[in-house]
Image (tube, rainbow, N blue to C red):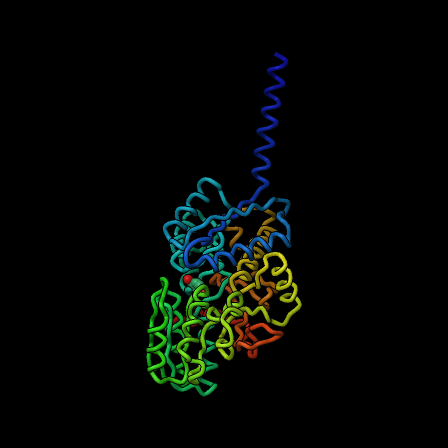
Length: 388
Ligand code: PHB
């Protein structure tokens, strides 16, 4: 009898211990492509998140943070299934990661239904944040960078231009935002070319762009395609022909830039992050990230790094409470200094507000970099800031 009581006491002790350790662990369900054409972006999402935890540690507000990571292969249906399993089986407090707009959109209804924050770190279509009141974004939106670049192009005497974009939602956002603003500034878009998003062959589209006899080509392609694009751009001899190449900074991804070679020199882009950004915070980030991962950080790894900071700081504010309404409320209006410069989460839209830099590719200390030469401070997503 005495033995039975002891055993029972031991069992209760173990059960209680287990229950309290489960309560002390907060799970983040991270979804990113480790396979398929978007895996280069996925690698940086994961590296940025892990590097943040390595630097900052894995506990916040007295709780242990557990990062669960699964591969969606860039497939919306797979991402949705994983998100469902994270919510139902793993009881995650936050969903995070997400590249490729269709993936972020597929998960949004689950975030809304389950009232679980979804931190979008790698998808740039403007409407994403409107698809769940629990979405916050630490990446950028295409109109956010395309509008400043259109203003720069119109002011810098580029009169006739071709747009060439990837044929899916962020490309359509870029084409419209850039085109509308550029025309307002007196420019003429002589052709609007759309390239398939799945494994594109850029050569015939670049040839069409060249034949349009414009002074410049404006380009948006998702970051992972930068290497293939640059090769075909160099093969066509477009840089030598005097036609300028401008675009969103996805095209001159810091991770792929060195492999693009001298054909990339002179490309002007607008974006929120450059590994060459001059600040102490960025210098420490670049050297620490390189040491930890062997890679140069890019606009994706910095978005994951900042997204983890947003989650940690929100948990700090709630004292470790994981209620979705409290967490998203804590994220609204949060501001901090990122390696890219000052950033904040717009309390109305939950989208990121950040500096947009105009940069030119130059060789510096033997490597290619996006060198910032002009700044548009604290830009909100213009597609939401000026509804019309
Ligand atoms: C997107 O699918 O929204 C996306 C992906 C990669 C980028 C930009 C946007 O570089």
